[in-house]
Length: 131
Image (cartoon, rainbow, N blue to C red; front, side, top):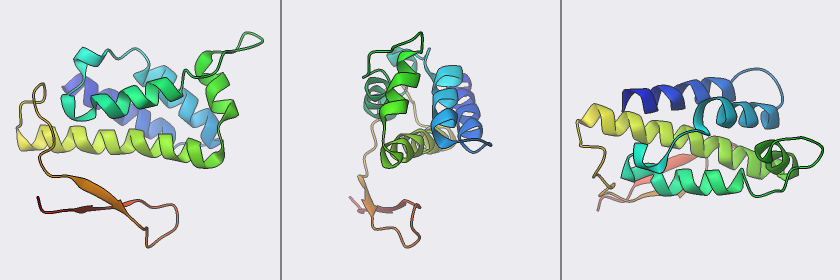
């Protein structure tokens, strides 16, 4: 678990660094997350990670570029922001699971979390539904 959360943390650092967001997303995924296997991930983030993986491998590369670079190049700024945010949310889930002492291999979130309208543009707010 520690190695997985460390990889997501370094991906988050890449996302918050300098440069265009598309380059940062490509770097975060290729350098830190691309080689992760599903069986290494806790159940609570597997589906989100698989969605990220599919999106970042959805475009056939040309001119020697990577699949990830080709996919991100074709994305809108909104999509790029959404996938960057998903990496940060997965890191948050890993931290939550780690700090709660839950067994990560078999845990699913038992309290649904829904996105609400952001009070600040570009900032995602979450609220617990209390279930």
